[in-house]
Each structure stands twice: as C-alpha cells, then as structure tokens.
Image 1: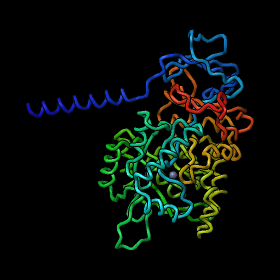
Image 2 (image 1 turned 135 degrees about the vertical axis):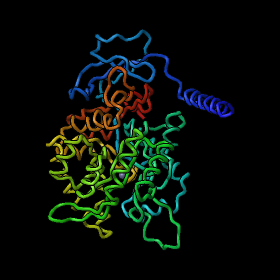
Image 3 (image 1 turned 90 degrees about the vertical axis):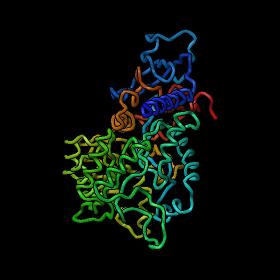
Image 4 (image 1 turned 180 degrees about the vertical axis):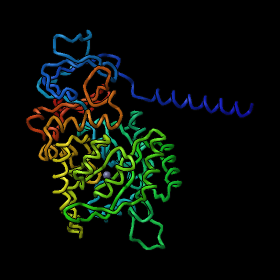
Length: 441
Ligand SMILES: [Zn+2]
C-alpha cells in the first residue's frame, strides 16, 4: 500500500513536471500569419513554385498554395517575401555546439583542460544561436566532447524558450574504448578529462547506452575507427572495438528505440559499422564501391562533412599527418560515386570541428562541386536529413501539418548555391527569428 502511495505521488510529481514544461514553452501566436513567397522550393517534389501563399497558425503550417487560391484568414499578419526564395528550415545532421574548432590536438586538449563545462556551455549557447541565424532550424549534435550531458541541457533550454537555438537532436557523450580517443599522451599519474565515455566489453557498453538514454540521448554515437592510413590507394583504419562490442552498441541502442551514428573514416571502420547495423556513417572518406553498395542495400545514411576535412587538412598535415590532405581527394571521389549509386546523403558539417564563425552553409557549395545538383544538396539538408532524424512528419518541407520552420534568401540558390551562405530570413515554429529582408539591419 505504501509503495502504491509512493508511486502515486511520484506520478503526480511527474505530471506536475510535464505541466510545468508545457507552460514554460513560449506562448503560441494566436493569430494566423501569411507569407507571400516569390519563389518556394518544394523539397519533396524537387521543384520551384512561384507566387505562393503559406498560411501559418501557431507553430505549424496549415495551408500552402498559389496566391489567390489559398484561403487566408481575415486579419492575418502578412510577411512579404515576394522578392525572395523561401525554403524549409535547414537541418545540419552533424554538429558539435560544445566544441570551438580543433585543427590540432592542442586545440582540442586546451578546451578540455582549461575550460570548465559551464564555460563551454556558455560558449555553446552562442554556437546554437549562430546555427539558427545561419538558417539551421534543426541540428543533430553528435557528442559533447567531454562536456557530459550539457547538450541535453541546451536542448531543454531552447525548447523552453530560455535561449534561441535550433531544434536539437542530441547524442550526449559518444562511446570509445580505452586508449582510443583523446585526451591521450599525458603522464599516467594524471587524471585528465575524457572526450568520450570510455567503455570496454559488451556489458559496459550496454550500461553506457542505458545511462545516455536515461540522461536524454536521442542518438547513440560511437567512434568506430582511428589511425587512418593509405594502402593501395584505399583509406584504411584501425577499428576501435571488437565486432562483438559494436554489435552490443547497435543492439542496445535499437532495443531502446535509439539510432546509431558511427564515426567511420577508413574502409575498415566503415565496413565494421555497416556489418553491425549502424544507421549513419559520419565522414566516410574511405567509402569505395563495395561499402557504398552495402550502404545502398542497407539504407544507411551518409553525412560526408566535406568542408571540415578541407578546413583541417593543412593544419593536420603540418602537424605530421599528411594523410588528411589525401583524404580530401578521396572524399571527393567517394562523393561522386555515392551520388551516382544513390546513397542517402544527409547534410552534415561537423561545425564545431571548425570554428563557429565559419558559416556551416559552406558545405552546400562543396556538395554541388562534387556532383550533386543544387536541388539534391538542398534536399540533403531538408527532406533527407528529416528522414534520418525520423522527423519527416514535422520537418524538411513546407507543407500543411509541419512546423513553420523556414528560411529565405534574396537570390535563387538553384542557380547560385552559395546564396545559402546569406540567409536573410529565418522563422522557427511560426516565430520570426531573423528578418534582414523586411527590416534590414
Ligand atoms: Zn564530429
């Protein structure tokens, strides 16, 4: 009986917490808004529509169609984007808001050794706002690099309207095995911070996955490989876990309805992750015919993160790892092949791996230069990324029922893809968060 009472009161307390959470959400706009879009990119249809009206009520789109044919409620607020191109809010499926660039090991170690987690989290609030202002209304943040569960806190603060930022899908700590991930190379007498949750053996792995889910992980991220090297023109690598361990990561995550992102750069790491059933391959510079075919067959997504590879190559080569320069060429070849063979490519930048003052939209121009059409590149950052996040019903297109997450640029990104580096208008959940077009700053 006492136990039942306890359960009842805990349940009541939890209900209270849920109510509090709902009440703390930003007040919904009660009035309808209509956006006049000169050009509207229909990401699901892969086409451009002209002179469209988008009707928004609260945080969602309710109607979209040609001006004059769409029922616009009397007294609706009007936003005139008739001289602009409107497209869905962009999604970056690989970010690190808690990292501020790490070309060299020293850059990385500095942040973990000299910056407290609260300090890093304060900096992350700026990164989150930057992503939103760049037009990225949703991000999948792929591990905190030693900042524990601070990503889950950021996600909550954004959701409650305390700070501005994109919708966050978080992975908390990431997993790697003993001795396979920084910080490394310090005296054994010192206890230094870890950039990941260190786990060895299937039992520890399953427990870590459970802990991360308990503390808010939407995704499980693990580092599948390291020590990249070239052999017969292929990018090879050392795999961090045994096959049994990788299977335990994927199995436990899937059992708890979480998906798995595998950092895998060399062909060995990519193959190990694919065999175990990972859901996305991150970086994947060493993808070749065989691994690409396997990805297509298994429906695995690829986040190429091209720009970060280019950005860090010189610095890492200068620090003694010349393989990073070759990886830029290899990734270009892999990208062309993956486009040809129909791999599901989700837009992912690794922003945070480079400084947040670099616009993460620079990735688009590389994707087009490497073989995608501008429409395909935009779909990577909208419909495809939304599917990867299993959020296709809410994100990725401007359609009735979906969140009113949208951006506008003044030119036509289908003719000039780098227009996306100059987003002028951002709306998230029906609220305007940037409006340089209407009210130039
Ligand atoms: Zn990363």
